[in-house]
Image (cartoon, rainbow, N blue to C red):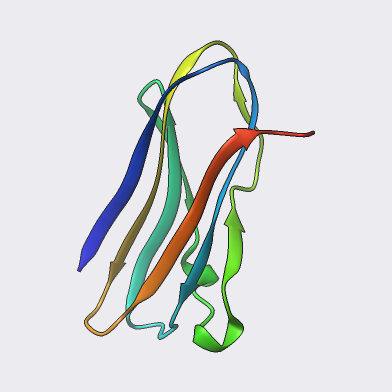
Length: 104
């Protein structure tokens, strides 16, 4: 199976931003073949591999965040998203997505 969960955020003002979400899932290496978080700025996509963030139910929900600076030089159209490809029987939960002004 595969899916692409995304949300168009519309036009955002110039500035620095943070991006992340909360995730809970099982972990069987053969069941998760690809897992990425991404954002697009004016159609240009930036991805981060988060396959190793699938820690298993016993590890509890945890935050996954984009590692690196996100800066809009000018007012820009933004989309955020999460993709997953996996085998039968895998399950997961993703919630509390944010793309917010950075405090740095």
